[in-house]
Length: 189
Image 1 (cartoon, rainbow, N blue to C red):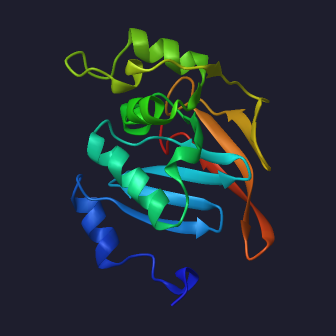
Image 2 (cartoon, rainbow, N blue to C red; image 1 turned 90 degrees about the horizontal axis):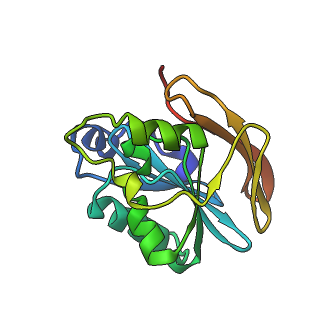
């Protein structure tokens, strides 16, 4: 059965929704991998010059290991991770970024507004926001582009879910056909 023929709701997806320690992954295009954990996702975009991680899910080593395992399972090489691009500053999207940065020296991207806001206003005073354990290398804003190899990510500011929320549009391929993917930073204000 091809991945396009697989049902969307399966026992695997139900289990993922119920269990925060459960991870699942799938190639959604030939060059775009999703790693899912409960209500948050990590995307891995394959380019001709390496891999781009978009969002790093929760701050736990299990999340990092799930991302690395998923990359290996689809035949890609984790050591080719070059960039970590973040849609927004919530810890469930930036969380295990410190492991990605430490292991692969990935260049990091986030909006300046979210970087500054979440430093001053952590979600919970008694919970350290793990994303602050690594620096942001490049602040991106509306109209910027992020390029690696044959892929260009177009950046759009979409505040609401967070003050500095970002959305991205980029090309993906499936069976040598080109499509556009759009990822946004949060689903509600």
